[in-house]
Length: 257
Image (cartoon, rainbow, N blue to C red; front, side, top):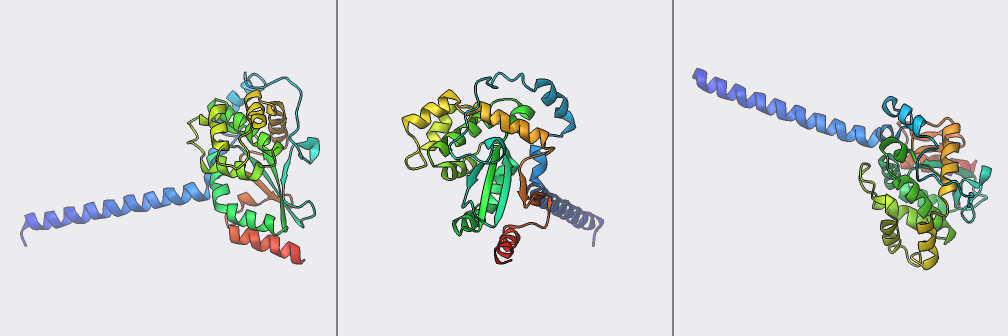
């Protein structure tokens, strides 16, 4: 075999090895994105802590008006929107940001299981809405989106509209949910939600002060990122072995215990 042919084969093998390494790296990034998505929506990022603290209470979108609690809100200071039967044996507490991609990843992966358990009256969910991304990246999409789902709660359409917003969530850096018109447009995907009362609630920012109060409770609670998902007070989102099937098993065990 000539030296030229040997060099050509060696070069081909090297290119193949490089391509395989690229594929491995891409797969590793994909797994990391899915499993470790929570790092995206973190309050404690060193680069933004100072900015968040400095701008606390200064954002023009923070309203000084009275706190208007959404219909049916429960818990301490009425900051939780409940989904499911009050007497369910298990309660899942979720702190979410409507603009947070990690929250969207959680919702998409766990939604069928959560719906199944809630509909079977085995699980009750308490949703707390916060605005981390507004503080981290600027904008008002977290606040506007949270106010809109609170308005949907007033109309008895929280779960359906909440799911619609996560299904249609824009990229984290795209503050599309800062547009009330966009939020009202998406309400058209939920039967009976796009009414004059809902539109007024969204456009008036009726629940803005309530959202800001919930966000302050999140900060004072010592939580560091969204989603924060608590089952029986334990943060199960930090459990890297957690899956929808495992969560279902835990809830089923509590109901048979």
